[in-house]
Structure formats: structure tokens, C-alpha cells
Amino acid sequence: MPSLPKIKPMVTDAILAKPHCHASLVIEAKNIHKAFANKPVLKGLDLELQPASVFALLGPNGAGKSTLISLLTGVARADQGYLRVLGLDPAQDPIAVKRQIGVVPEELALFESLTGRQQLHFCAQLHGLDRTTSEQRCEELLRLTDLVSAGNQLINTYSKGMRRRLAIAAALIHGPALVLLDEPFDGIDVIAAGVIRELLQELRRAQVSLLLTTHILEIADRLATHAGFLYDGRLLDQGPVTTLTEKYQQANLEGVFEALIPLPDSQGNHLTFYQRRHD
Image (cartoon, rainbow, N blue to C red; front, side):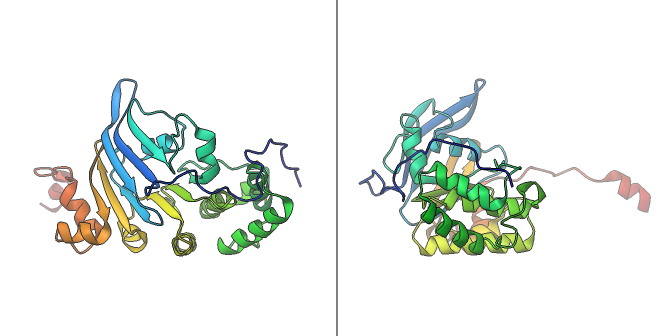
């Protein structure tokens, strides 16, 4: 088996430090602007994430969801606006933010030549966990993600769903106070989706704050306590799910989505070649 890469721990504590935050909000964003190559992506976005909530960030492709996550993690800087994550400025102190959050990006970054178990130990070492704590959390996470039998297999043999589950486990190894998940249900089968859904429910019961993006509105309805609707770089509305469905007189988040975000106008477009076939 390949050995773990030698790394310098991010933190020296064996467990995650308590958040350096006395404010009530886990995420606070005000008037956030971000452009790439002079093309505006976020246009005055405001967002609030309450403690111990599950916030579903919903919107079409290109709305700015992944850009927002890159700002929250300190990977990119906002051009304008006020942003705090657990009371910290991710642009000024990205390492301190990373100590307290877990991130599952849409494009997974896993070491193909390691086993699943080694990947988790590597992440534990990165966060400064001692060997005993690392072993305990690794085995618990492998059980919760249904990867015990695959723990000693190389990651390059994993299916997409297995990789996604492992990436979530890696993001949780240090016990973060906040977890960001970018399209965690994208392209995976029903079984993998069920395992991930149950794991997120477990985090919700543990009062871990979650922000997730997804195109699967049914899952958002089942998991989210709060939701926000992002369109063309602006958050059109946000709040508790029950408040949103009552406000827009809809049965679920899909109805609210359709009430807020216009669908492309296909009026006047037809499949004429099918019509000719049946004439």
C-alpha cells in the first residue's frame, strides 16, 4: 500500500477548536459582488445562515452558487461587500476559516493512489488529529458512509457515488462546525444518494450547520430547514422553508422555485420533423 504523504498539520489541537465567533450567524454576507474577466457573477448578494440550520442554496446553472462557495472558503475574494464565516473574514484569514469548516466541492479532489482509509487518515493528519482520534473517527465515518468493505481499496477503483461519500467523510474528519456541500447528489445512484441523505440527517441532529447546493428540489425539501433562491447573481429570497412556502402559497420548494425563477420561453418552438412524419 502507498504511504501517506508527509504534511505539516494545519492545527495542533487533537480536536476542532470552538469557533472564534460570538455572533448569532454562521454565515453573514452583505452586498457581495464578484466578477470574473469583467463579467459580473454575484451582484449585491445578501445571505444569512442561522446556527444548526440546513440551508439549501437553489438556482440554475450559472447563477453563482459555486462562486459563492469559493468566497466562503477563501479560495476567491469578493470585489465588494461584507462577508463573515463563523465570525471570521475568509479573505483575510482563510486558514482559520478552513480549520472550522468542511468542504465538499463539486469537482472532488481525492488521492487516486491512496485507499479510502488512507485518504481519511491523511485528512486527519492535515488537521492535526492524533492517531487514536484519527482511527476512531475514520472507522466511524466509514461505517456511516457504508464504505467499510471498500476502506482498503484504492480510490481509483471507486465509483462516483463511493467517491462522493468518501469526500464527505474526509470533510467531516475534524468535526467542523459548518459544512459546505456543492452538488453532493450530482450524478450518483439512488443507494449512494440515500446514504448521503442519512448522513446529512445525522449532521442535522448533531446541530452542525450545513449549506448545500442542489438541483434536486425534492431532496432540498426533505433536508432543508432554510432555503435561498439565487438567480443571475442575486438572492431573490431566503428564509425558513415553511415561511417561503406560505409566502408564495406553494406546497414545496419546487413550487417556490417556479414562482421566483422564470423558465425559458419555448412558446412557438416545435419539433417540426416529428409533425411532418405524422402528416
